[in-house]
Amino acid sequence: MKPVQTALQKWMRENENFKETYARVKQEVVNDPEIKEFLSLHPELTQKEIDKNLIKLYEYKSQTKQCTACKSFDSCVNMLQGYSPILHVENNEIHLSYEKCHSRLDYEKQKKQQKLIQSLYMPKEIMEATIADIDSNPERSNAVRELLSFVERAKNGVPQKGIYFYGPFGVGKTYFLGALANKLKEFNVSSTLIYMPEFVREIKASMKDDSFNDKVEFFKKADVLMLDDIGAEMQSAWFRDEILGSILQYRMMERLPVFFTSNYSLDQLEKHLATTRGGVELVKAGRIIERMKQVCKEVEIKGENRRN
Ligand code: ADP
Ligand code: MG
Image 1 (tube, rainbow, N blue to C red):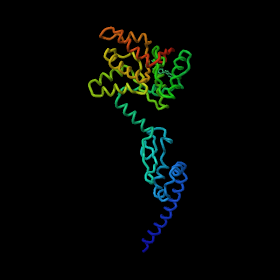
Image 2: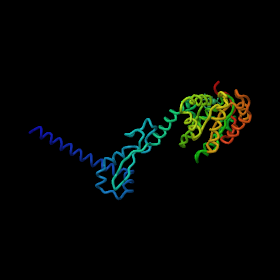
Image 3: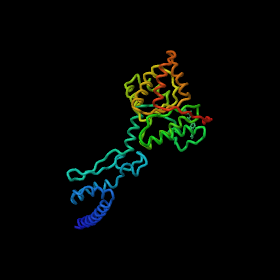
Image 4: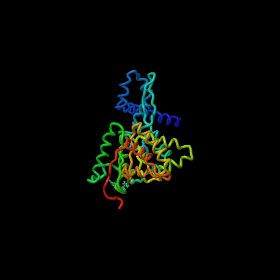
């Protein structure tokens, strides 16, 4: 008989614990501010329904909502990484479901972009650039002012015109774009920053596979497009007219901004773009420059070469 008694005692003890735990969990759940609000919005829910779903309510309470306690997607603490719980009522019954959080959506978007465009890679120092780190050297104050003005306007939606930063090698033109891209992230605006020579190479290489159209579409439609070092790429009439021309045309019509950096002023770039293996085509280059002027504003950056 003894083992049975022991088992019975044990069960009763645990049952006591269970009751205590249950009462405690219930108190925690009904006193949680978010659950309180949810219940107050749904007076139709019966006590029986609430008791029946205590575990669901507890699960909801224990998960963070829309990244409130998360630093990044990788450090997500929820049961389902990158998913936030949602409570809703249907036919007087409580339901718990999960939806993707902001971080997960960003993460998936990034993965998709990385898969599509191989050369969006930028050096670490550019990826980590911040506007706060741009020193206000009087030589660059105009460029900084233009950058800050864009940021101010971007708070109320992406402005129509970007900036064409030009100046000598090493003054920080690419750094400006990196800093801007990082700032725009804070307003959920994504930037596509690509080094022109890589851009040309990537598009040319994709002529052989079926990703070509998707790639061109991607650059046409990016929230903010940043073309780094225009003029440094291999000059090709085909790329200039069919690719760059059509991307700019689209963005001009859709009022989407483009940023550029270059060692050339726009006047100098015009001559540069005119000269390809096919000869000198001033009219065609002029057409590109006209479109560029519609999507960005020319701003000079001066200063010393920071790479020395
Ligand atoms: P550019 O594109 O004009 O040739 P970069 O943007 O590549 O020049 O800048 C040259 C170097 O100076 C890079 O190593 C960059 O990280 C650094 N740099 C530029 N601006 C700053 C800044 N404000 N603070 C710190 N480093 C900077
Ligand atoms: Mg550069």
